[in-house]
Every structure is written in structure tokens, then in C-alpha cells.
Amino acid sequence: MTFEDLKMLFLSTFRDPQGTARWLIGQNFPIGARWIAMLLMAVVSALLGFLWNAILMLRMPVEVTAVAAGSSPLDNPLMMAAIQIFAIVLSAGAMAYVGRLFGGRGRFEDAMVLTTWIEAVMIPVECINLVMVLILPALASITGIVVIALFFWLTAQFVMALHGFRSAGKVALGMFGTLLALGLLLYPLAAMLGMLPELPQ
Picture (tube, rainbow, N blue to C red):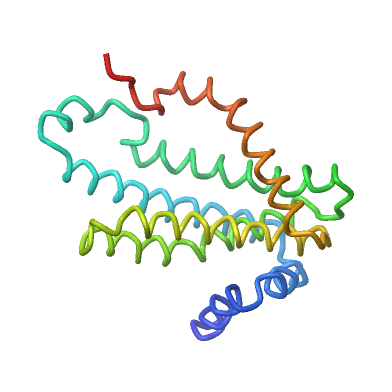
């Protein structure tokens, strides 16, 4: 696949997300290629996240950065990559199996392709957001909301294509319920790993 092919696929993701998702599923990529692509996207996302953290630390007061330095697993790029891999696999599993509970027909292997592609598509978007934060920090909250909204919109569209669902509202409700359930389940693990911000004394 050439750069031009990737560019056209990237643009079609926003023009026709469900059509793009169905095209990706129809390629029947080898399972090894799916895992390699997922690992690659996890590493790139982890590097971008590490850069985000570094910039945020630079923008904080010296007293805060001195206390926070080295206090979180997210300060370790390898740990961040491992967390990103876990997040993509968990997202693919939730996309496939929760959808099947509601009558969907999607497979985990295809969900992994879709979650990996969403990750790939979001990387340039997050880079643009990062540049906006550096140039126009006053708009950081607005651009951040746009990025989050775009991510959830693409995910909902891909879920509909994966399972053949027709109601975007029901899919959005199912995604919200799944996120809430996963958040409750993963909160103790995140707290144990020191990934949650400390509460002020």
C-alpha cells in the first residue's frame, strides 16, 4: 500500500467511516499482520503520550514537577507502551464481544483491525492538537473536546459497521455503559499501579 493509498484511506475514514470499516474487514489481513500493526500503533501512541506528558511537565511550576517526577508508571515509555497495547486489545475485545451480546456478528480479529486503524487515524489528529496546545494554549480545552468527540464518533461508526447495527443512539448508549463498567472494574488496578492523580491533602 502506497502513501497515496493511505492518504485516501485516511480521508475516506471521515467521509464514509462505515464504508471504510467494511473495506478494512473485507481485506482479511493475516492474523500476524494484525498483531504487528496493533503493536506498531501502540508504540507510536505511547511515544506521543510520553511527549504529551513531557510538555505538560514543562508547563507546570517547578515545585509541582519536582514532586511528580518519576512518581507515575506513565513516566516510563515502556510501561506506557504496555498500557497502550492492553488498552487496544481491551477495546477490540469490548467492541467485539459486547456487540455480540446485543445481537451483533463481529469478530475479535476484525475489531482489532478497526481499533488499530482508529488509533492510526487519531495520531495525526492528536499531533495537530498538540501543536494547537503549544501555539494557542487558550484553545487547548476546546481542541481536546473535539479530539475526544471525534474518537467516539469514529468508534461508534466502526461498531455499527462491524456488527451491522443501524441505531447510532443505541450504539452510543452501549458504548457509554461499557466504558462505565470498564472504568469501575479497572479503577482498583489503576490505583494500585499509581496511575491516578493524588488527591490534595
